[in-house]
Image (cartoon, rainbow, N blue to C red; front, side, top):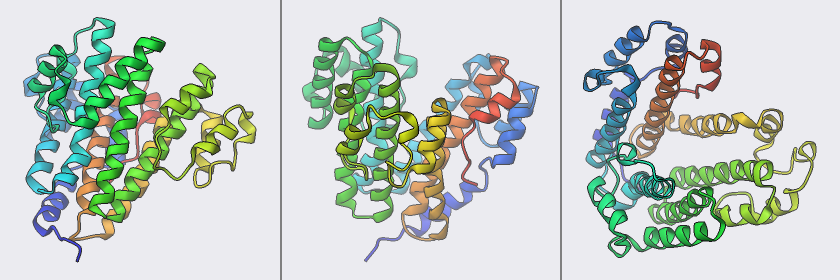
Length: 322
C-alpha cells in the first residue's frame, strides 16, 4: 500500500499559496525600482535583512535554499527520499571545491548547507583529501574526476563525471523507493542532462568521446542514438530523439535557451502532482517548484543589477508552478 503524508502535503499546499506565479514574476522583471522588488520578495518570506547591499542578494537566496532543505528533512523521514533530493547538494559542493582549487579561487561562500554532509565537514574532507570518510559513490566519483582532469585539463570533465555518478546513484535510490512519479522524474532529468550535454559537446568540443564519457545511463534515449546522430547536420536531428522533437527543434533554432526549455519540460511534468492530495508527489513537486522560484529570483535580481532590459530578463524566466 502506498504511504500517505497528510501532514506534509497540507503544509506544502499552504506554502504553495505564498509562491510567485508567472504574472508576478514578470511584474518583478518589469519593475524598475529594485527596492520595490526587494519589498515584494520580503512579503513572500525572503529575508533581505541579512545583507547590507543589493549585490549580496545571493546570501538571501542561499538561506532560502537551506530553509527548503531543512523542511524536507522535517517532512519526510525515508533515507532514500532524502538522498534523492539532498545528495545532489553534496555533489555540487564537491564540484565547487574541486574546480575552485584548480582555478585558485575562493569557494566557501558558494558552499550550500542542507546536504547529507555538513558544510564544514565537506570543506575539511576536501581540503585534507580525506575522501575515505565519504560515501563510496561520491568518493569514487571524486577520484575519477581528479584523474580525468589531470589527463585532459578541462574543468568541464569534473562536472561531467560527478553529475554522472550522482544521477546513477539517484536512479538506484528511485528504483528502491518504487514510486513511479519519482522514477520518471529522475529519468527525465537524466535525458535532459544528456541532451544538453550532446548539444554543448557537439558545438564546443566536436568530439564524440567527450560526450560518451559524460553520458548518463538510465534515461529513455540510448547511447547509440547519440552516437548515430553526433555528426548529423542540425536540420536532420528533428525526429531522431523520440519524445523530445519539439525541444530539439527549438534547440536547433536557439541552442542558447536549452536550459530554459528543459527546466520548463520538467516543470510541466511536476504540475501533474497537483492532482494528488496525500501521496509524496506534491512534496517532490514543491521541492522543484521552490528551487525554480529561487532560480527565477536570481535571474531577475542579477539582471536588474546588471541593467539588463526587462524584456531580456523575462525571456530568461522559467515557468512557475503556481
